[in-house]
Image 1 (cartoon, rainbow, N blue to C red):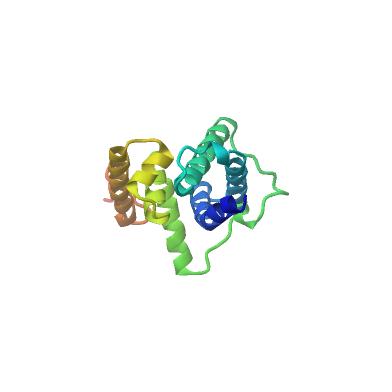
Image 2: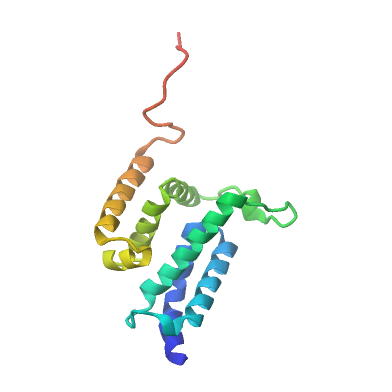
Length: 176
């Protein structure tokens, strides 16, 4: 039991970061990590790989998040006004850095789920391509191509001027 805790405990901060980046809500991310840890402890003896539990824990977390996204897309999200905190209602940014951070998160959220997951696992959580492939249960070549497309698309989004709709906008009225 203590060996299991010594292996799981160092991974918890990375799991929280990944969960927060996926769900973009601190309380929901903490709940997701809690569910992940409960599942990991309950199924500890069923692990196939007896090496580092890090990829296995990320796979559990990722799968739980995907299941939540699917349920939320069919049900929709409901928050009563009384239960909504400042974060859900909105808050103004007080620093330029926070605006930039939110802009990057917003543009990251525009990426397709499969590209965003690969980018977060590799760029933020520092997993290897092979570990990310195991977490997402996809071939390593797919990880590499999704990462490349995610980086390229994110770069394009970051270079696009604020308020710009992209190259497919047709001007309907002349300025003369």
